[in-house]
View 1 (spheres, rainbow, N blue to C red):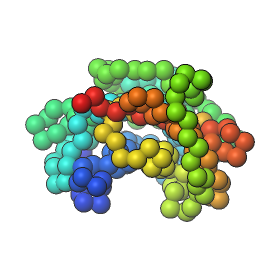
View 2 (tube, rainbow, N blue to C red; view 1 turned 30 degrees about the horizontal axis):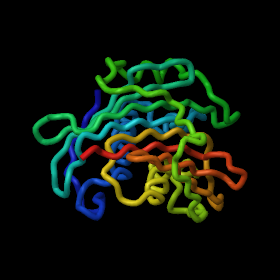
View 3 (cartoon, one colour; view 1 turned 60 degrees about the vertical axis):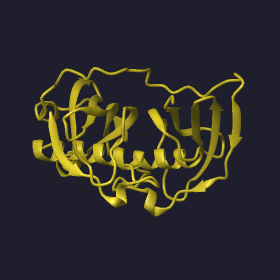
Length: 240
């Protein structure tokens, strides 16, 4: 596994000086990037091989988020390669070494010449040690858009993708989808999140959010003009 220590900064916090969910995902992304770079299978190596990893799915189980100036440990490891797919766990521990967040993710390796999925070559597989997956809940990858089940359905104002939403792959960064989705439901105390990425949003695309609310759960579809989702996210609030 790969770990790094960090202290929670002001720029990473929300309105109650707690680590924001977007910053949490950023920390996880940074962790896997650090591991891949140190293992010799990072961005620059993959770029020369015309390859890139694209995330398909996140699942985060949040026991507690750290606050401003807290010291935490961020960790990650792959637990399976299956054809073009890479399966990877992430976690965050507090200063006492206790898990406060656990996460699961699925990634697809893409050939940037054909834009099609491709099997991970040997040099990628040999760069990592496969670990036993974390003890956590593993839900289905697909987040279903609700049918008529009594949920309140709200169509939000469209959002135009700006350059600050993009990453170095020139499409919307996966953490930004979460930030956009959460902006439609307001500030909540979230216990778990699932994000199903369907297609890439690019600069200038318009996103039409639809929120499906029921009790302590919100499902947010970030759709294109024709109603096809870029992503579908499920947020479950913490029981008080």
